[in-house]
Amino acid sequence: MDYSYLLFVNFFVFCTCSASQPNFVLLFADDLGFGDLGCYGHPTSLTPNLDRLAAGGLRFTDFYCTSPVCSPSRASLLTGRYQTRSGIYPGVLYPGSRGGLPLNETTIAEVLKPLGYATAAVGKWHLGFGANGTFLPTKQGFDQYLGIPYSHDMGPCWNLTCFPPDVKCFGLCDVGTVTVPLMQNDAIKQQPVDFLNLERAYSDFATNFIAASAKKKQPFFLYYPSHHTHYPQYAGPGAAGQTLRGPFGDALFEFDTTIGNIMTTLEKTGVLNNTLIIFTSDNGPELMRMSRGGNAGLLKCGKGTTYEGGMREPAIAYWPSTIRPGVTHELASTLDILPTFASLAGAKLPQVVLDGVDMTEILINHGKSKREAMMFYPTDPSEMYGLFALRLGRYKAHYYTRGATHSGTTPDQDCPVFAVLKAHDPPLLFDLEADPSENYPLSLVGKPELQAVLEQIKKVKQQFEASMVFGKSQISKGVDPNLEPCCNPQCSPKPSCCMC
Image (tube, helix red, strand yellow):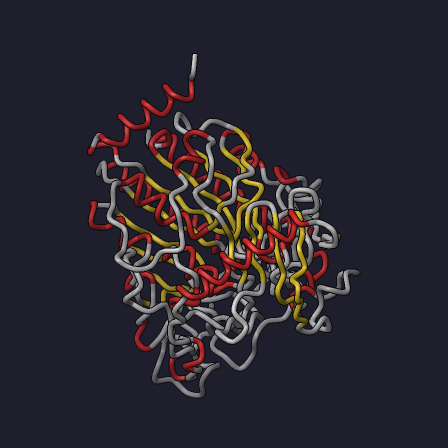
C-alpha cells in the first residue's frame, strides 16, 4: 500500500479544514555550524531535543541561508527575498543604526496575521531599532516581542557572566555604547540584561504564548531567533558546566533545553500534531574564535565567506503525523520558509518579487525541490561584482573567492582575511555531492559535459542578475549614537548612565 499517498490525502483534508490551520514554530540559531549538532555528527554536543526532532522529522543536508552574516540572513528569512532587494547590506546593523528592515517589506508574521494568527518573536532581532523603535518586531507584524534588538556582544559585557555568578565568561564585547537592553514589545524592560536568567525568561515567554494561543484555539506563529551560540557564549544555572564541550556546548545545551520546553508545552496543550517546527541557523560558525566559535564539519571555511561552511546550515522540519522521518538531499533555503508557511496556511503571498519557493512537496512527500539554484552573495554585495558563487543542482561555480576575519585561525589558507579577493575565469567548479568540502576544483579539459554545465550556470546567473534590483542600502545610512536604546534617555553622561 502507498502510505505516502494516504498521508498526502489526510494532509490535504487536514489543511482544507479552516478550523485546523497549522501552527508554526521557527527556531533560528546564531553562528551555528553544519557540524555543531549531535544529529549532524558532533561527538560531544549535548542536543537531546534537537536530536529528537531530527529523528522524528526531516533532516536536510543541503539547506542554505542567504548571507554569511547576521542581519542580511535574517532579512531574507523573514521576507523570502534576497537581502539585496531589501537593502540589508553591506554587513550588519548596529545599536545606533539609522536604517533597518524597511517597513514596506512583508514578513512571515504579516503574511499570517490576516488569517487570524497570533504572532510573537522572542530573542535576537538584529533588523534594526531606529528612532523610537521604528524597526522593532512589533512594527513588522509581531503582536508580542521579548528580546535584545541586536547582537548580544554589541555593548559592554561586564555583566555577561556564566554560572556561578563570580565566573566571568570568556570574551570581549563592544565598548563605548549602551549596555545591552532587554525589550518587551516597544519598551526597555531591563538594562543591562541579566544573561544568567535570560534563557528562562525566553522559555517562559515562548511557552506562555503557546499556551495562551492554544487556550483560545487561535493559530499561532512563534519566531525564536536565539542568541546561542554566538560568541561570547553564556549559560545560566542548569546548563553551565553540563557538557563536555565547554562554553560553546553549554550555550548550545541551554538553547536545546528551551526547545525541549517548547516541545513539552506543545504536547501538553494538545497542539503538537498541528504544529510545523523548523530549525536552522543564520550563518556558519565564527572560526576565528576557535573552540568557542562553532564547527562547520566537513565544509570549507565558515562565517563571512561564500564557501559552503559560511552558508550551508543544519536544518530540521518536524511535524508529527504529517512529516515522515527521514533525510532529504534536496536543495532548500531559508528563503523558502515564507512561501511554504503561506501555502500551508492558505495565505496570500506578498505582491513583490519573491526568491523563495514552496517546500511542501519536500516536507510532505519527501519529494523534489522546486528550487533550481542557490545564489551566494558576499557580506558586501554590489552590482559591480554581482554573485560570488552559484549552485545549480550538484555543481557550484565560484566567480570570486575571498576569506574573512570571522573565518581566521583554521589551517585552510583560503579562509582567513589574508585570502584576498580573487576572480576566477573560468569559475572554479565543484561537484558538491562528491566533494562537499570544496577541496578539488573540476578540470574542464576534455570534458564537454562540464563545459555544458558551466554554460547552464552562466545562463542562470545572467537571468537572475538581470532580475535583481538592489534596494537602497539601509546599513549605509550610518549610525547615530543618539538612537541607541536607553532606558533613561535624558540621563548623562551617556552611554554609561543607561542603566535601569
